[in-house]
Image (cartoon, rainbow, N blue to C red; front, side, top):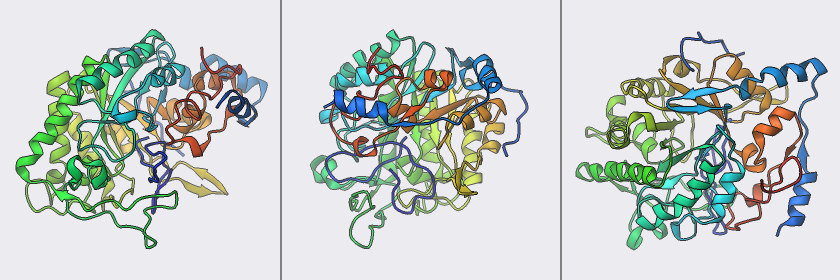
Length: 436
């Protein structure tokens, strides 16, 4: 799932039979003060026998984990009372044919829903120009809104809360995905640098088309696309929206100085580069209320030629903007890249300053497992932890964490295919079933 020159840990996002690089939508701390609230049957059998063993624990450790596992403690997320802190991260799956969500998504999401749990949907296109990957869902038409409703209902019947992630890929696209073969839009007209061999990444990428720089008078219409998408998401029954402000897509193409080369009020200074993102946040909040809006940010991530020379300043500025909105639902941030320490990959835990500065619920993502997730919650480093590939392959991940049972291994080759079952709804529960 990682793309060329990625220096961080990726998580699941778009791709399919068409050869395309994987998108990211999709993870010693210091304790913080507790001052905030903070086909198919056979393949399933094969997966059941292909498991990741958890670290062994003593009987006493097991007893403690059962009695007070931090990840399984309740948390109040705005108006939502969560029963645990294991969040389904946004994972693009490329199975929404013709940009319309499909019935099989109802099973996929409801399998991963638990009473009081929190799910974040795959990245959902805000408009016809937002598309950059095959068979990603949209939420700009009435047909799409109606198609989302039974999926959301299936999640709610399990007692879970469901957030819709809304995005625009910007220049991470090709003319083939754009209306009338037009150029993708961006903050810049700089093309994402192709690999020397003509492929974007080793996983079978693509040469992205040269983008068209948005004119100032065009930007309000893009902001309005996000506003309308948020309204549509609430109409479809979602409990809120997550603005995708991460991983080199349109908002980051404005925010990060490696990409934004503008000389107008949307470029240059940090405040100017963040202006578009702030306008999107403000518009969405005006439409649906701060209590229904979260955002995903990745100031440290270098993806799609999109990085910043001062990620700490960028992250701090954006948190400052979020704090202006009383009741803003959550800030969801992606960790810096992993480091290799003593031969083992370790999370660097670079989000602490942002966690301390943000006034609301803080979600951390980026390579977490059961042990690390429990630690960051116990230490006050994060309120919630988002899990991508582990949740993809283990629909009952919170229960597996509770019981300490082995995990299914994920099958990377099926992340972005368009099959409605294989690698999608056929991962077994810990009891061997594939549905509850």
